[in-house]
Image (cartoon, rainbow, N blue to C red; front, side, top):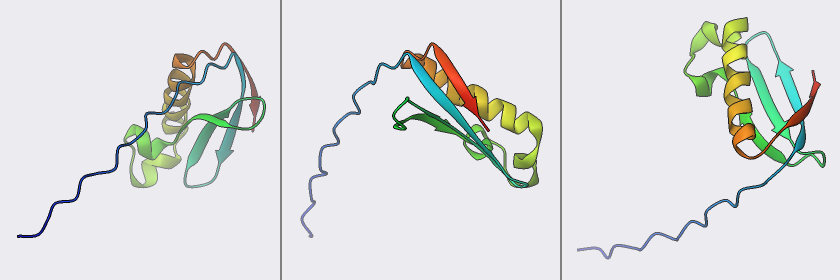
Length: 88
């Protein structure tokens, strides 16, 4: 039988504690991508309607974009985000 290779150990992401950030919203006809970064531009959290569970033409709805934004903000607030500037 073939030898089984051991999996390389994954290092766990260290939790960034950020109090202020920037919310970048990229909206197209077919999808909306919400990315939250710190003031230097390093990504803290991101989400899109596809990650929330929408598929196909439902990803382009305003409701899907709203849920994607909520999902990204929950992730960022878990990392200590308190205030944010919104850029569309």
